[in-house]
Amino acid sequence: MSLLAQLAKYDTPTISNVIELFHVVPRNRGYMDQRIRCEFGHLPPMVGYAATAAFRSDAPPQGGDAYGSMDKQLEQFATLPGPAVVVFQDLDSPSISATFGEVMCSTYRAFGSAGLITSGTGRDIDQVRAIDYPIFTGGTNCSHAYCHILHIGLPVHVGGLTVNTGELLHGDINGVTRIPMEIADEIPDVAREFVAAERIVLDYVQGPGPCAIPEFVARRKEFMARVVELTARVRRDKK
Image (cartoon, rainbow, N blue to C red):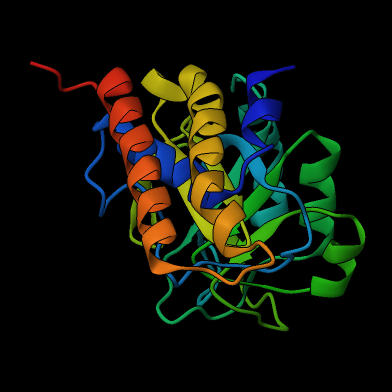
């Protein structure tokens, strides 16, 4: 099974929990904030490599248009190590029009894209839902106004996170996080152990009951001991 398929077996909060164990990113960094919401929570986790672009629609472009720039984006997909997650920063504030619609999402999907994230808005939501293409947005908008792509492949700032082309992203109904490449190969095995540790508590409190505080405390201590052991094994800032 490929690395991305293994990562997609876990929800984004679990991935975030496991990243914390490695001590390579501060706990309050490395993920997008509540401004970026998942439109299709029924879909499995989105995993792929960022393909960045900047968008604007409040004034006519000085040259070109959104669709005319898509061929450059599709060429960018081929330079990535796996499926692209298109990441748009909408430079208009507030957003003036939709960053994407049915045509763009259908095209991205046809060329292997795993999903799309925009700090702006989107449209044709029902049509995009019908093709099972994951989208994460700051809202919706019926118009495309003077939509055009300003640049492709440069760093963008979306949901409080600076994203560079080629970075590994994981997203689901809970949000989007970045997986540091230096630990990506280790995440699935550690996630499996972390989920098993969580079951120590969950199997008890989700069981038929009744629950007792002493037993809960004992299970909580066992869970924490497992996490401490796991952290000691994987953390990167060992002396």
